[in-house]
Image (cartoon, rainbow, N blue to C red; front, side, top):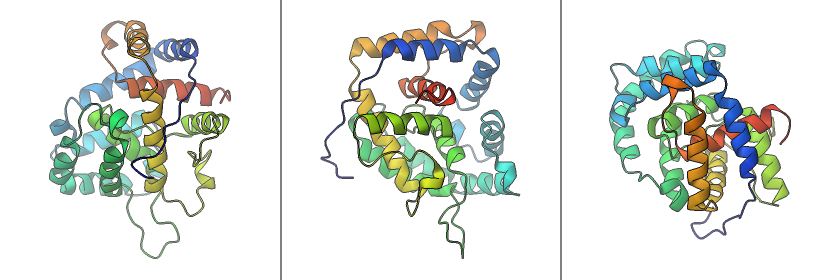
Length: 246
């Protein structure tokens, strides 16, 4: 996608977003899972600490059900790859500014394009360029910085695909990974980045403050902390997709 591409202006029902966020936050178990990851990834240095990287691999996989167990040895390989690549990833991710997803999505994608293959292992002699750990990779890197890397999951992709089709956007986030065709996961991730970039850029300061407040104020007790706008919007799209109301 070109740097000078035309942005899409999305129509977002903020009342629906607020409803979804409150419902998501009403589950203390779901909120506790986020809380554990929030504390496991307190900053970028800790997130990529090679001495403890396997702890965060296990937490992301276990708490967000990315099913690494289906690929024997995947957790060990991914942890080893992250530990080995840690210094380079730290330098790469440290260059991102807080507003780059909104203001410079091409920059975020360039970082993602280099970072994702550390987890999306290349498979020799395979028709598939990468293994199936796309969801895990996006979730792991999301927690590393919180405001740059969209979370990939089946529910959200259905809701995002439907929204993009309503707005006649092309190309779209695929409705299902079975529809990827010859598109690699890394290439498709660019579509997620541009979707959230356009969506966030269309929100006014008042809208953003409203969503941040709804999320913060509906988090229960000791699990209350400030989420990124990206995470809050992800809750909404997961909620819509999970209800078949894409």
